[in-house]
Every structure is written in C-alpha cells, then in structure tokens.
Image (cartoon, rainbow, N blue to C red):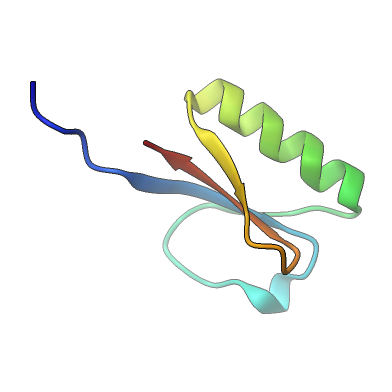
Length: 62
C-alpha cells in the first residue's frame, strides 16, 4: 500500500489577521465556537485537529 499525502484541510482562528492561504479559513467569534468548529470539521473530514497554541487550530488528514 502506498502512503497517502498528508494535507491541511482547514484553519480555524478567532483572529483573522494571523492567517492567510489557499485552504478554507474559518473565523470564530469565540474560543468555544473555535473548538466546536474544529471538532465538527475533524469528524466530518475524518481528520485530526492540531493546536498551534497561538490561537490557531488546523485540520490535517494523516
């Protein structure tokens, strides 16, 4: 079996000035909304949430 490419599927933040790029970016109004959005997307996309610990979560398919 070949190894699938890892890819960033989405970025979630509460501070839109911290992100830019070619993946979908979700701007949350609160920390709670950011967490809920990240978990929902990860479940839906069969992926994992990673916390950069600077207010940004990103969703990656491994």
